[in-house]
Amino acid sequence: MEKWFDVPEKEGSSVICSRVRLVRNVSDYPFPGKRTKEQSVEMTGRLMNGVKESGSFAGSRVCYLYRDRIPDLDRTAL
Image 1: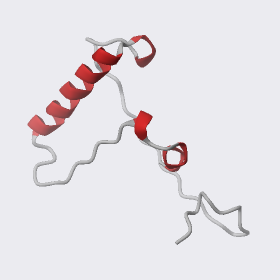
Image 2: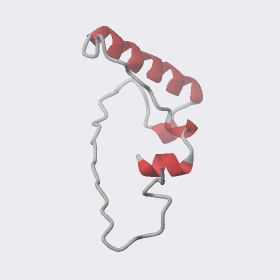
Image 3: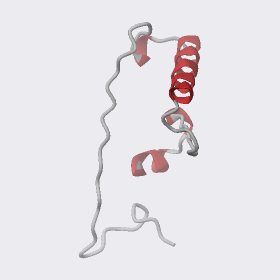
Image 4: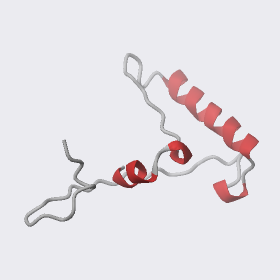
């Protein structure tokens, strides 16, 4: 099956766009450009534990995507 973002524009093609806004409220850590790798790993761990402990996704399959590990084309599609 073709991926719509791999195919040159076709007449009458449609694109569905959605946007999610995440608000940053992590006062203990600097913004990404100022953060060390260690701070990023620690913050990510705290956030993942917080999601798990919240119980909001109990019984659900949760998948975490690391932006720096996603291929450019897939990141664009997201």
